[in-house]
Length: 207
DNA sequence: CTGCTGATAGACT
DNA sequence: GTCTATCAGCAGC
Image 1 (cartoon, rainbow, N blue to C red):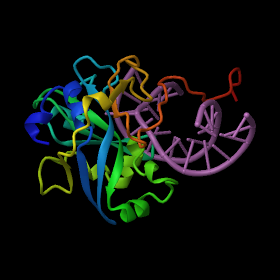
Image 2 (cartoon, rainbow, N blue to C red):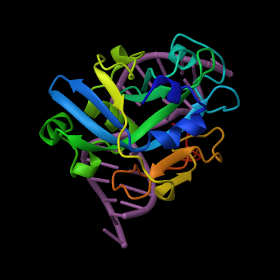
Image 3 (tube, chains in turn blue, orange, cyan):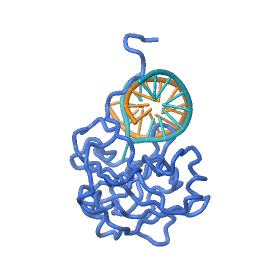
């Protein structure tokens, strides 16, 4: 996809990313996935976005030009990857939540040995990032540059009739916004889990 | 299939 | 201190 197309608003770009192909050169070999699930985030009016409270060293890529990877570390062990959107100066990004492996299946299975079925290889944002080997050092990469180690290319577009929308997964703030988009025909769409609610310690016990 | 839990580091109140 | 744009493993249908 061209930088110009990605420089539009996140709500316009997100559904258009479905069906695109993300290729990465991993230490185990090249892997390509078809993007089947995404979520939109933007600074302007979205409390759930990392950029909502202003620019910091971590979220700086979201404020830069479109078409660059925003990779962040979560839960002390996982990475998640976004593609920056909107013109330079306006912060927004689309989280890549799930994909289907196009090639090389052998390399993919090597990279994700715990996946029980092929549909699970890139089912979930951290699984997708892990499969493609995306880490801190990939933050800021230009995916529209053919010379980059991670590239986004146009694939077969998912018809609008097959695109479903709903609330974002695991998001507490702005939980009602239907800013998640997925290919309803894909078996590799990640499981929905509502934001908020989580049990940490037994009720009434302080330990 | 559904639901629960621990692991684990860093950004932020 | 508290919360997180998560995952794998396991229990119980």
